[in-house]
Length: 147
Image 1 (tube, one colour):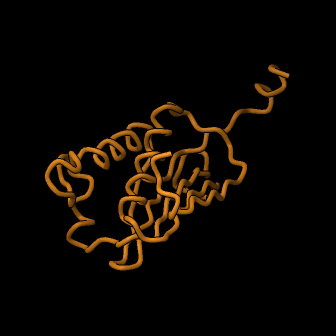
Image 2 (tube, rainbow, N blue to C red; image 1 turned 180 degrees about the vertical axis):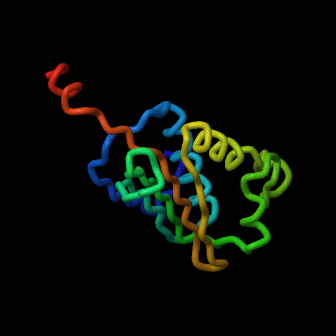
């Protein structure tokens, strides 16, 4: 409800294995990133895309990771800004418009769940946040025991 009607929210959700994480905290992460994307677009027409899929990762314990991506068509960020966005109290917003805690909290939640977060951005074209969380593979015998 807080996203202007000039901004389209696109969902690209694929079925993925479970993860061991706090659902409320992950909701906070996604809402924060979508809200930041909407702020980056401002009053213009734009799009925020939220996607969920599974990728192979031989370095992870299960060999599989869950990827959450939030991309926007907003103003993008310079390299200098990108290097600081996860710092507590860092903000590019004016006085009284933001605390600079949102992305710091997002980073803390993601890393606290055993995941990682990265950002790609091009000034004038938008930003993409990529979150990787370890997949939790439920053994077949555990599934059979519940059924």
